[in-house]
Amino acid sequence: MLKKLALSCMIGAALLSVAGCGSDQDAASSDKKITIGFSVSTQNNPFFVKMADSVKAEAAKQGVDVKIVDAQNDPAKQANDVSDLIEQGVNVLIVNPVDSAAIGNSVVAANDAKIPVITIDRSSDSGEVVTHIASNNIKGGEMAADFLVQKLGEGAEVAELEGIPGASATRERGQGFHNIADKKLKVVAKQNADFDRSKGLTVAENMLQANPNIKAIFAQNDEMALGAISAAKSAGKNILVVGFDGTEDGVKAVNSGDMIATIAQQPDQMGVIGVDTALKLVKGEKVEKSIPIDLKLVTKQ
Image (cartoon, rainbow, N blue to C red; front, side, top):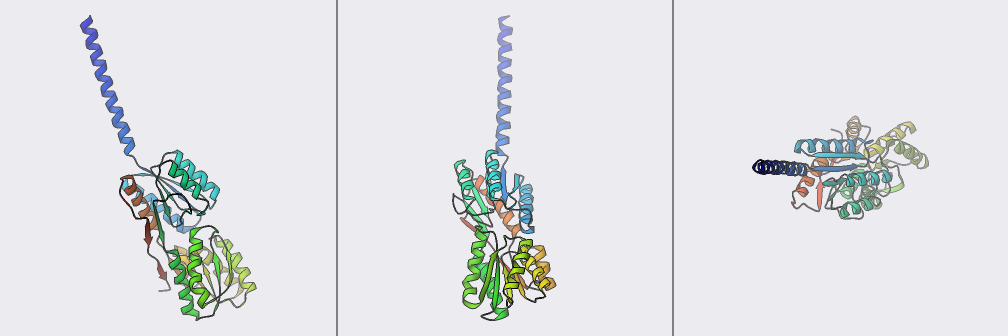
């Protein structure tokens, strides 16, 4: 009887040992499943839709999970979204900020949770960001101004539609534009239209009414540029409109002759590089502090 009991105990111990090994393997296997969190500023803009789609596609290609949350251009919602992603324990956080100042607290929270942060298209004013993936927005603004000088000559009256106040892209594109325009053009009006087409229409209508000699409008994204085109048509004015982003609608407007040019970014490239960079961080590889994405001046072919 004692022999049977001893044998039974040995078998039980062996079974427990096997069960223990199995659960360790499962844990190790689940540990290897990488999850990337991506907080995108809005999905109500084709540029960012393309960016999010490329993040999703590249994550699927690489066999990793991705959780995408849409801030709907609301800094408070973005803060809550990022907080949720941190709580869910994502391995890496990619953030496309609505507002570069407001996102700082969320970046610090991710830092505290030991989650590496990548910013994409727009930067964060505070917190530790491992790498920033973006076009050279200052250079893009300069390209737009140079193009208008080339088309209109020096001293022409122009206006500017600015993006969301506080977004790094707004500041940088504006800075680049004014680096040239303040010396070679006459900027008679500038106002925020929040990267939004309908706001771009309304603001441009008011600008054209108040400044009848405007010869061109630089819009800091294609959505506002498309709004400005509608405003000019309604006012019966033939003005040059330059956009920024190179969205599908923007390029169509260029090719139809409605828009004179757009400074094209590559949101799909940003998304792919964002995921690939996140995977490098998980593997402990070093990455560049800044990863530039090429810009291109798109005019009618």
